[in-house]
Length: 181
Ligand SMILES: Cc1cc2nc3c(=O)[nH]c(=O)nc-3n(C[C@H](O)[C@H](O)[C@H](O)COP(=O)(O)O)c2cc1C
Image 1: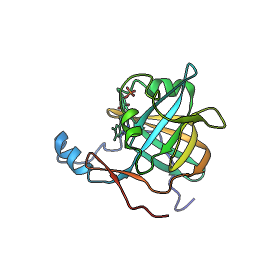
Image 2: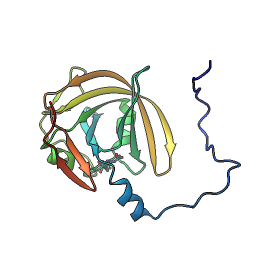
Image 3: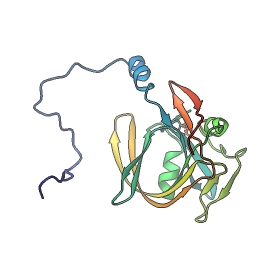
Image 4: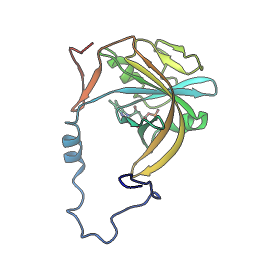
């Protein structure tokens, strides 16, 4: 069908092209890419009936039809293999003032939700209180991406609120906005 891009097999599409400039150094990469202001999320799930999760900046809407989202996960994450095993997870979009929650779930290790206020969602996932939005999904695909992997998930539940103002992340720091309602 004209005008429709069809998905091909996952592959490196550079073959046959002239070489580019080579890789930038890591500090420049972090400095320049850190100027892209984002929201922040916490990705939560269950492992052996215990709540697990990690703070995730690299979250994105991906597809409306079918409804899918994308997260980019560090290969070194110790929490991700637990979430993958459960197969379902929630993405909590953080509200202004939830810096502590972001810090708590950014620690490596277990029992990160010990001091976090959360309740089980209607499907039993650990849902922190006071979020800007809550998205539940089922993992459908992982794509290799250097020192990260891209996790693609089918959306099953979408809930807005209760908060209305986002927590932002810019140049390595938390920013609260005046917000829009
Ligand atoms: C502000 C912020 C953003 C982060 N974004 C991501 C991310 O997008 N993807 C990711 O895999 N880890 C991200 N992390 C790191 C994880 O939150 C966590 O530290 C890492 O997964 C190690 O914990 P784990 O071993 O329990 O998985 C972020 C950390 C912070 C503080």
